[in-house]
Image 1 (tube, rainbow over the protein chains, first blue to last red):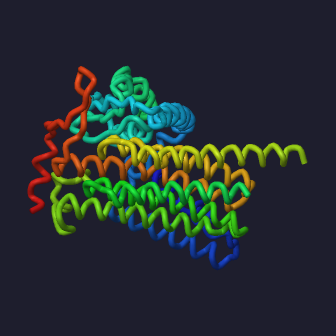
Image 2 (image 1 turned 120 degrees about the horizontal axis):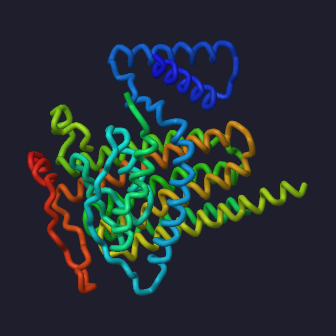
Length: 159
Length: 97
Length: 125
């Protein structure tokens, strides 16, 4: 129920942001279509903690600034590699463990790995992610599991 | 002025990606370059709206971002399975794009 | 007045940094030796360039609906670009496109990678 209400509310906020015309007719049309979609999703039984990960929101606010800072740092190092004349790359494939308990958490972790340049999650099997790194050091540094731990913390406790 | 510089830089990047799409060698290189051109187009539309004093073009950029993502995924699926009619409904295949 | 000047300078800097990273990514796309390494160069233009360029535009747009739309575009790009990159690399690997991997002695070679994925790409024919 909380998830349905949150989903409807966030869709309505998106509608308000995208429309920009605040007259009674459009506001009511938006409310009707949001309610209709929530009803359809309720019938399909897809409203749960997976389609709308409400439990991640408060901790996510702390995680995303850290992730952006990681992205900036690794962008800088990859830009240096590209611009140095010798092209000092040593492409490596490593397998890292994902310790998250839910699918949402694992997907968040894999996407975070891909989002930071220099590491790219290629394949996922169970709780193991195959990562392609542009340098050996960059790929190996994932194994300390700093990002893994942060995503696990983000996941918190579900059910 | 600054929007003109950013527009020029984005156009240069698109030209570089176009060279990669031309040279290939594999189909994946070309899809990668096409994806990059698509992402840059989103930025180009947004910056160009500001350049011409009509920042409402952000709506168009948003729509283009949506279309670009779907298009790239569709092309990838086509080249991976040699067609669109393959194992989407098989429960074992779920979660595999 | 002073604040306006500061904000203008900040958005100038962000736009220039974003443009520089976009061009560097484009150069990397041409310089890298194979698909998987090129993908790292492309992710440069998929993360840093949108963040900086759209950030600079947001400062210009001020606290308006235009900026809100730019935030939505940025979030959308940041959520979809890793999905596209992962799908591309997984599809390339499943089709048997060999990655160029480093040897311990410093050279590089094309290597077969054992992946459970390679079987399920078979039924495509």
